[in-house]
Image (tube, rainbow, N blue to C red; front, side, top):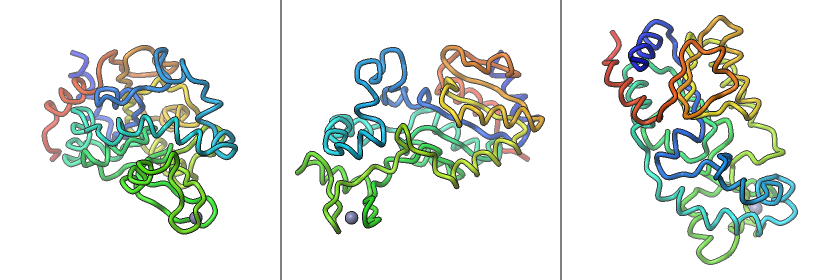
Length: 248
Ligand SMILES: [Zn+2]
């Protein structure tokens, strides 16, 4: 029933912009670091996830992430990622804004993608600006605890937004524009707790658009949403895509 209702909202409230968080990637085996059982419940993010921690001891931070990198390398897009790419192809989804850094939307085929927290796709040298792709970083990590810049030798920084860093200007500006132009913002797998991304649905609402939320568990904006579905991203989006053939 609720997926049918969601279908009507997507059909009637174009353009539909999707905002995704960690909950869409857990079905691909990528842990949600912020969940009650997540990494940050066991490790202090101040020691491993802040830009200050990285600058103070980049090898320690790489050692922490290096042990988890194989999960990101081996993860495959799931039904949720694939359904969103199909809905974009069919003209029902105009863009996906994601808090995830795992590349799974891109690998599923989403083209209009805004990665507001950056991506593991590349790492960069903070001194000389050399950019190194993910696969090469994985190679470098096989021989050293931290990947060194091939040009100058400084430890590379992954191009993901760490705590204490500003979000990339262009990405957040684009996300904000999409949010304010959306007839419907569909939030998938985000608890809407991390600002400024959590403020994007408010921009949609302020501009007269509507909000739908698919998430396991509650979010602070449930009361403002036209529809909330407490369910899995994969099964819900798969069902939604089945209801929405190509747009005419
Ligand atoms: Zn360099």
